[in-house]
Image (tube, rainbow, N blue to C red; front, side, top):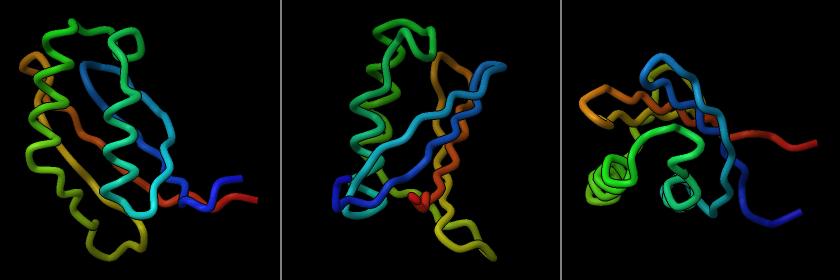
Length: 94
């Protein structure tokens, strides 16, 4: 097991929910890792749309803490004109 923290990413976009995990020393590092591993096969969009989505999020990668919750964040961005809402949860491992 890695010394890095585990985060779970739940993205709601275009009628689907896409769930994956990434590790990082902090939320920003884990989110960068998640973006890097996100693939067109996984979310079924064009290479160009995914590239624009990744570029847009990387330019301003600031997950927002969800008020009243602990270790929960949110991001949002458009992919192919559809709003993508990404919830991020710090995940405890057994």
